[in-house]
Image 1 (cartoon, rainbow over the protein chains, first blue to last red):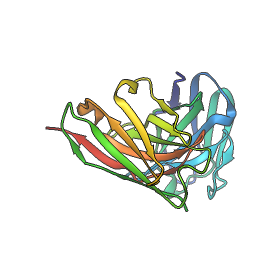
Image 2 (image 1 turned 90 degrees about the vertical axis):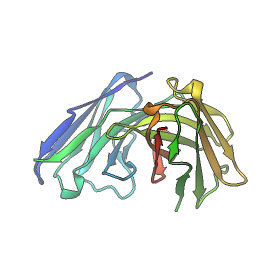
Image 3 (image 1 turned 60 degrees about the horizontal axis):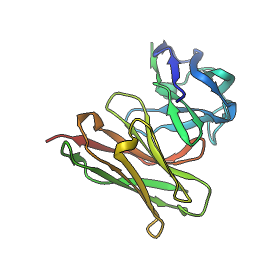
Length: 108
Length: 117
């Protein structure tokens, strides 16, 4: 089973700042099968990025994804008030799905 | 627009079986090459994939839960269901259903299930 480790656990930033979130896999993940989600309190997660770097429908271009192999990054170029939330990475392989433990982006 | 809605008891006693149903609207559960699955989130914690059923009926389970999980589909009702047996307090969580390919693109709103006597 592939384990995804996200860092940092919490990121304290101000609106307008840049956020860089990391997701590291215990073994190589196909870039086609690495995704990122945003979750706000009391809501279901929302798909942000799929295929490591493609934005889902309706996702603003301040969100971008990159990486390959075992190291992947979600970048939010300029934080808007609505971006403060928890972010999860997720991988798929052999009809199995795993999530990272999440990174909370909080207002500083 | 595809919509998913979870339903089932919000309170289950320890050692009993948790049963939830996901009703899909706005699309057919059997007409496309998708998986339909369950994910849970204990209060204040992260997401855990429980298992999935392919449109063909094949099932796939998280190894850590496999011995207690059954997922089935009722295409006539456009629903799929989760059964989790021998529950304990550790199974208390918000349970989500979702449409799945390599990503989870449509989610239900989630339903809180508490395991308590």
